[in-house]
Image (tube, rainbow, N blue to C red; front, side, top):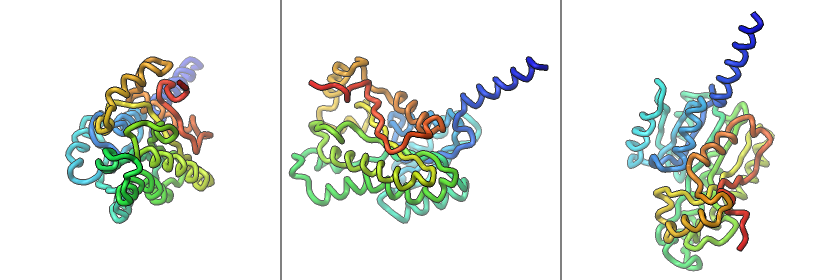
Amino acid sequence: MLFIFYSAFFNKKNMTTDKPLLGKNALVFGVANKWSIAWAIAKAWHKAGARLVIGYQGERLKKSVEELLAELPGEDTPLAFPCDVTDEEQVSQFFAKTKAHFPKIHVLLHSIAFAPKEALEKNFYETSRQDFLRTFETSVYSLIALAREAKALFSEGGSILTLSYYGSEKVIPNYKIMGPAKAALESTVRYLAYELGKDGIRVNALSPGPINTLAARGISGFTKFLKESALKSPLGRNTETTDVASAALFLATDESRAITGQTLYIDCGYSIMGF
């Protein structure tokens, strides 16, 4: 009998460890294709037992997102609703639809960034007012908008994550307007963490090293920078989407319950290097 008791106990413990997000509901914004960091995180959370709701922008991405979700194992296909984060009405509708299925949520990923092509091609000092405002609205204000709408559904507390980059602290040539935008995003994380902390909601940023995604390839000279980053990083390699997903899983669980307002670098050590 004693053997049976211990066996059952440890089997249950192992099952819980394998599924640390079992029974949790997670919202993911920013899935664009199978190479995107948001998709890697969504897969990790799903594997850990979370029920997913994906927010995608426009009909252009609907088919791509639905095809990706159909590949996930399990009988229940995650939900997916349109959500243009620059449209307050769509944001409200997204959360209304989510609430109809899940009265509470536990995790939210904001993996959204955008800068007009012109702003990345010109000198930084030539950034237009319109391009500046559009970049900050999409890349920074959207986190505030999502956190505000999500707050009521975080009835048991939880974790909000966003994605930043080292260009928030140091000048990365050709990153241009996105550098100040990421700096503002990291400051936003700290202020949200302060105000939402009393509700048990943690807010953190992940700052991966350069990853060969479709979005990153749009930055001039990215391929060269990718090679240089691997050479100069203490670990001698580039960051992979699975590295970021592992960190995102940790910050989504209760194992990180005392961590909030932080920017966690996942860059193989590149950010610690000087000359």
